[in-house]
Length: 151
Image 1: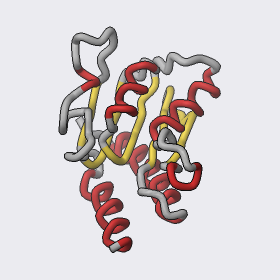
Image 2: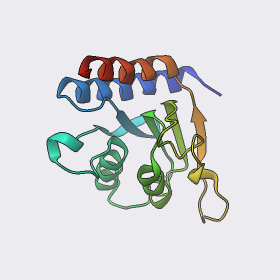
Image 3: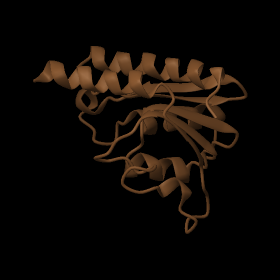
Image 4: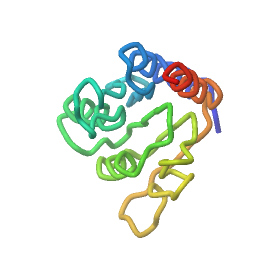
């Protein structure tokens, strides 16, 4: 169920995505919230860092782990503007994040429902609550507008 709280936090993830766009990165942003407090935020930095691992989700997980001084991100929720790819879905599982909320679907690389659903595969020892489609149109427009400008 989408709540005002989800919309508010997705707005913050969208702000992160806009930071990525401003430096020529694919506009994807993520935040991690614990006890109604944002403890980490990041945006895509693959081009600027020359690092294929520098996805918004990975960077946000790294930051939150530092803040909490541990790798288990229990009692946290990740908000991300685009459905996570297989690498990011795997990192979400490994960090034990119990819930993610995402905006736009990713039919080419999404692994939280589009191509497959890694986060709810019962063969893993951890499953994740997924809320999709929060501010879907706005998140999708960020990406469409970014790629339209590149062409």
